[in-house]
Amino acid sequence: MKLRQIAHSRVEDTGVLVNISVIARDARDYPLLERTVTATRVRQQLAGLVRRTVVRYAQPHLGALNFVLWRAGGGRELRALAVPDASITHALLNLEVPELAVFHVRAVSHEDSSLTPIS
Image (cartoon, rainbow, N blue to C red; front, side, top):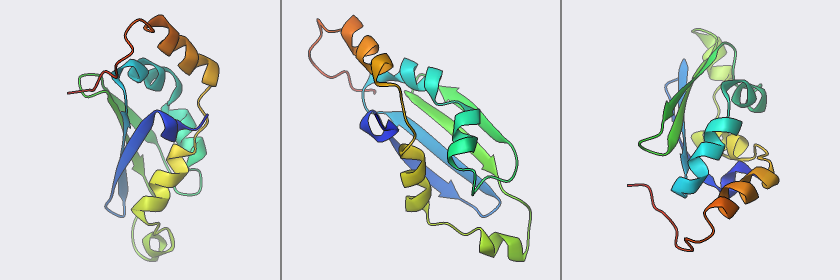
């Protein structure tokens, strides 16, 4: 299953830094995001964009993960790396998430049939 089925994303691209938030659509899915959407996997998924380190910040109170990606520095190189925010989001949300893990998380709390929004 694709990450987009359990999360949505926001991107801010300053040219040198790319800040990506991955937000669980349902609070029950946040632990799965925390386990499976690692800095290493994001770096691999966005390999054409990332030139240096990817740092992940967990924000459990928001049900979100925040990733900061550094691009190579300055000048003409930044123009060559220009990628629309929608493309970055699309590429990241195509990340594969193990379906069995989603099923397990949902099965544990199956008594509660309502969605649990993150406030």
